[in-house]
Length: 243
Image 1 (spheres, rainbow, N blue to C red):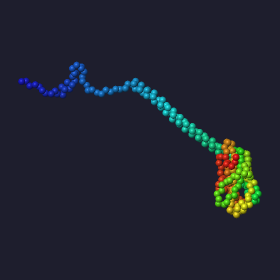
Image 2: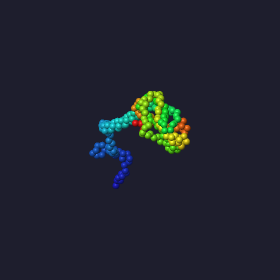
Image 3: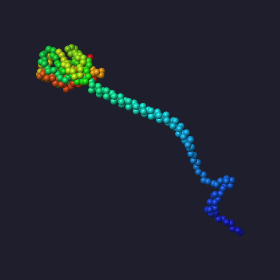
Image 4: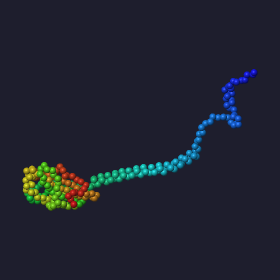
């Protein structure tokens, strides 16, 4: 019997066969690859425009909101600076009325009206208007806390000076205020102190009202006044005891 050739095809034959066409297809076999879809330029531009149509108004709103906030803060800051400058200028130009000197005490006669004198000056650069003042005294036992008291009855009264020009000085008078004999004896032996005090109210040319308070204590020799440690101050409000 004739022996059949059963040897396997060599690599060259396999490769050759792999290149043969499959019956009925007319095309060589190729390895199948996943399909890759590329977005065309036209489609990309269209989608991009649609997104822009959505986001542009939102972005504009955000930007305008931040701009409005920044503008508000800027305006607020500008007004604050302007207001501070106005206040500074007014402080520099306004009237300042205060006591610069007191008259030397004269002899106090028991139960006889006594006068006290204080020299006031406008040290500001503009007139002080509608100037009014009140001055009185109070005797307090030594060691007791002193608080100014303004009796509503006469002889304590409010006196109107009307106008203080810049640099002008005027004597203000308190009294006549009688000192009782027993009070005078307490003052002499040092068991009581006599306080002379008052208030000055005035307007400045900018329409603001001011109050100056002053207070002195009389020595036991009844000859010298010293500024008291309290109640010598100023405020930008109406004086409590002047209508």
